Length: 306
Image (cartoon, rainbow, N blue to C red; front, side):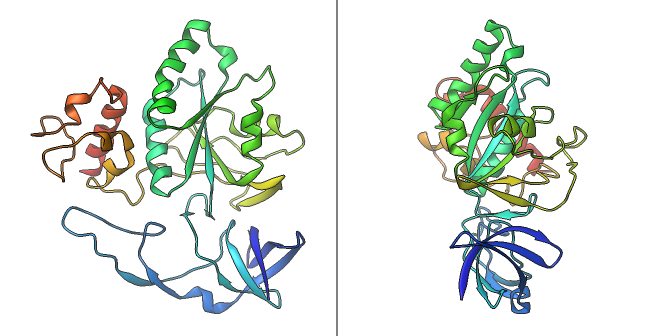
């Protein structure tokens, strides 16, 4: 009996990196196709103010890239519990997502950033914000952007890196890629694959940029591949084919705005909407809570009420 990590999937063939650093091509045992489990945060939990009941259901479970699997005679017999799981891209056990946004060309988009952050935090994944193309900015434009993103570093505690394509990339950022599983996402046109290829010469990611229309993805392959880099793995993935709020309701959206937890509303089920009675969050907008962050929260909230 062996144990290993799934690196890629091609049809019914699974490339698995074993604990001794050798790779094999395995098949999947049929008993994995029907698996009874609780509906939890990894899959389809639906929580609202009336009920937070956890139900069980039979689901079709197949190994994903990133899964730790147990093998018997080159057959996958079981999958170890996942700490998280994405559908688009179809990968599990992600440690971090590099959110690559351009400082300029295209214009930096705070709403898109907050939308990505909510989805990533929902899946218990660490976001790392990378700002590319800073060499296109004037000193004033870059200072203004850094002042806006200081909130994300200082208050929210996210790592933010600024990269100049004409200079060496931050060593701390490259070191992050050498541990755990990293997936790249972010703004269309920010140069995600270009960034990775530049930081890791010879890596040659072949991803296309996410389509600007509706956030739908284009990719040379629909298969997720994990590549071994130092002690970690980097995902060459199709990306997020459609960016919306997955498994999030208007009642739990606020859970992914950690700054709201610093304030105490009169009612526990307060949604922090405009004119909410006794809402302590409202009284700290612009003073403790970044105004654009709150405005983006309301925009998401309204989209969930439709």
